[in-house]
Amino acid sequence: MPITFEPIGTIYTSFKTKDGMPIQSNGAKGLEGQIIVKDEFIPGLTDLDGFSHILLIYHFHKSIGFELQPIPFLDDKKRGVFATRAPKRPNSIGISVVRLLRIEKNILYIENVDMLDETPLLDIKPYIPDFDMHITEKNGWIENKTDKLNKSKSDRRFE
Amino acid sequence: MPITFEPIGTIYTSFKTKDGMPIQSNGAKGLEGQIIVKDEFIPGLTDLDGFSHILLIYHFHKSIGFELQPIPFLDDKKRGVFATRAPKRPNSIGISVVRLLRIEKNILYIENVDMLDETPLLDIKPYIPDFDMHITEKNGWIENKTDKLNKSKSDRRFE
Image (cartoon, rainbow over all chains, first blue to last red; front, top):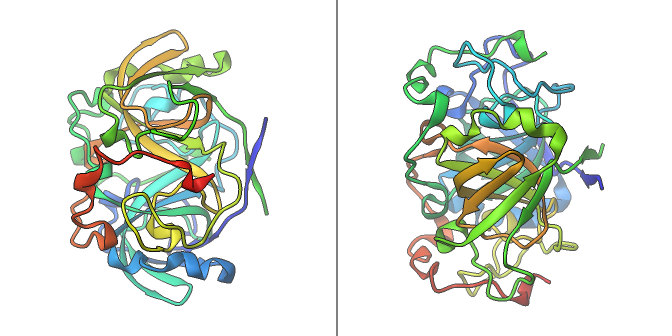
């Protein structure tokens, strides 16, 4: 039973290809982008400018097909795809939390972008610490590997 | 340009209707559920049991249509839908972070479930604090309202 979505807008960034792109928004500090939301959804943006951080759900539109056990960017071993944030997934859905700088009509100016230019945007939600921050006890294979985040950039492995 | 996804599995919970359902996983502590992942994706679950918390992306399958300015559960004023976590959205995509108790073959036993029974699951990602925890400066209309979370339950307003 397929589920069909229509983009609510498009995310524009300076990343035309995956080479050198940050692999998470925490590795993309200060990198600016814009979202252009379709005019019909402008009333849905009301109140959003009260939030400093927003959660974007989008389509990894350049990820064709998937691997069930890819080698993720921060590791050198194959891992189950659902234990990774790799873009080539059975459903190529990405999420990123970015900083919202300001909204002008249907244009959102954002910071900490880690997605490709012209990424189709599916949803925007406010990032709410009381909902979205969770204390974990186990961080699996990535424990102690995220300190490489600022040095790690995307490459062509998921093309 | 529509984007089509096929569920990778189904989430089973004790919530047959929206009445009385928790409105966020942080308001659902201890409530257990199961995910049954389609057999073909079992290799993709490798390594996932190393993580105590997982992020689920799913379809709000009982949300038909949307309102651009609903009154959210924790408020009494209309708000732009993208500034809320309301289920009736232009693309009815939900996200929840749940605790992963254990995996048996293609069954994931989870806790802190805040979704309806038989929810179609689109993706599983590991919850990684270094990627997913963000310090906010502004929490918009919901500031000081989340303390009602444990007392607030879903109702029929989004039917």
